[in-house]
Image 1 (cartoon, rainbow, N blue to C red):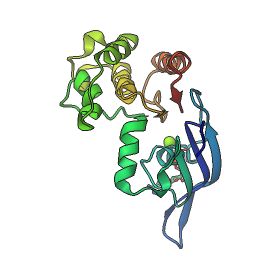
Image 2 (image 1 turned 180 degrees about the vertical axis):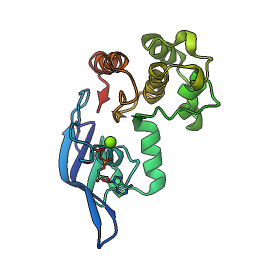
Image 3 (image 1 turned 135 degrees about the vertical axis):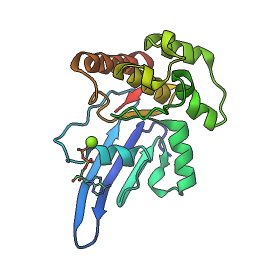
Image 4 (image 1 turned 90 degrees about the vertical axis):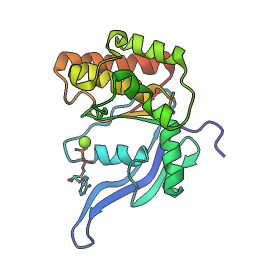
Length: 200
Ligand code: ADP
Ligand code: MG
């Protein structure tokens, strides 16, 4: 076993959608390793396969071919139940469209993954995260009562609450105005540097 593996890596990853007679090759034989604590940007034009790559790396989608490692665990070879566990324990995901649950408060949204996993909530981590994200006076609000930037900061706190091996953020600023988006990217970069959080 690799004693100091990258946080996440893929080998010869291919993902093909569609039927055999009309295949869409979304990701074509990609090999990449993401170092622990790094802040990595995946860049390319619309439709070039960025989301598909990240979904496969995060265990949200299955590759057609190839290997996907989160730490030492090859999730491409694990049964679905085990992938769900790795995703829950080792991965955070931030979507462009926030994906918060509308009936829950900000605090409940942030804590939901830990509660579903039956894991203890570390209040110190919760307080530190929500303070650094400027959310302390918004914790009892529902998503509809929050601005886009605030909703995305709730989603970031939710993704980071479990101290995951990797946080994936797929165009996290795509629904935000430029100033709010820049501030969010700066936060993610600072978080990576100060806490050694791997962010893609
Ligand atoms: P990006 O995130 O870089 O814009 P995507 O990964 O979303 O690119 O898409 C890559 C290619 O795969 C596109 O041609 C897209 O139409 C196709 N694709 C993505 N998801 C699906 C799907 N679920 N079914 C069929 N084709 C898909
Ligand atoms: Mg995309």
